[in-house]
Length: 101
Ligand SMILES: [Zn+2]
Image 1 (tube, rainbow, N blue to C red):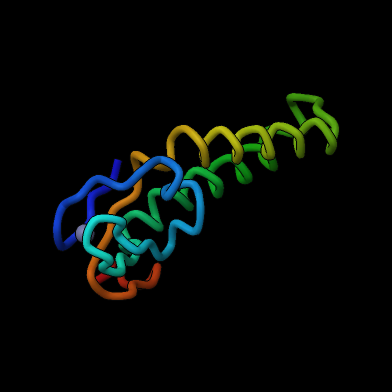
Image 2 (image 1 turned 180 degrees about the horizontal axis):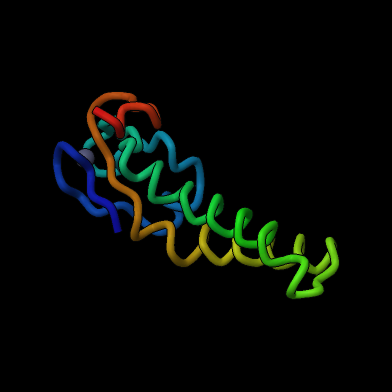
């Protein structure tokens, strides 16, 4: 689970699956912003799944609906189970593009 950048208090799972882009620390009240690195870690798997589906569809013979259901299940699973471990917080608001710096 991610920690507050200031007081290092651990955030709860509930906080991580809510409005996770901006979390107020429950211990010290400090505002935590999602780091650009964490934004990439969360976003990249979705791109990979989407591209894989597009590329593999002709061979896998899956319908659009089953593909969609798979993506939704993947998103729910990632959001609830994996995402809390990918989160990382910083003092300032960060954007995806900051990851290139
Ligand atoms: Zn704190």
